[in-house]
Length: 217
Image 1 (cartoon, rainbow, N blue to C red):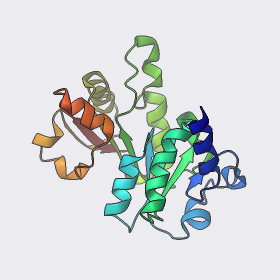
Image 2: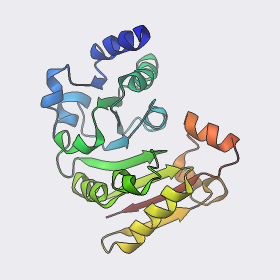
Image 3: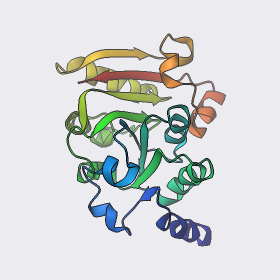
């Protein structure tokens, strides 16, 4: 508990973390480029980012883009924000909030790309609506993404992958859908840049193949 409180205090003072104790938390909507990044570069958002491995990894590879990891857990965000600070990745930021509330922080069309990296698969039937690729979340992404902006899912979970694929195939507003049940044996592998989260490494060690799909509205 003491360590967690210490980390909460640290992220409260970090400029690369937007969280409820800061005035900018209530004013950042529509102003990420102007008020935080101080540039007009494209914005990629990683939802349920955990420790932020993808946001940080992409930030290293593509300094010409901005990256925002979103998670409600401050202790997880502490890790990613620490790496970003240590490596001076000024194009990487973190937002501490519930994903259902992200429309309070982004204007329609403000996001250029969404990554879903190993989200909770919500395996029970009563939890299907909480899956990050359920219809209510899909509609949210559609509103927040600029035209042509991609949604990308990377997961070890077969049920979530198949559910998402079916949802995407059943919609009439989705284009350029590509998918694979084994990304490391697929021509789509370069799209993931071989960035591996600790969850991916753990699942791969158990013999799970990593699934990937992407599309835009």
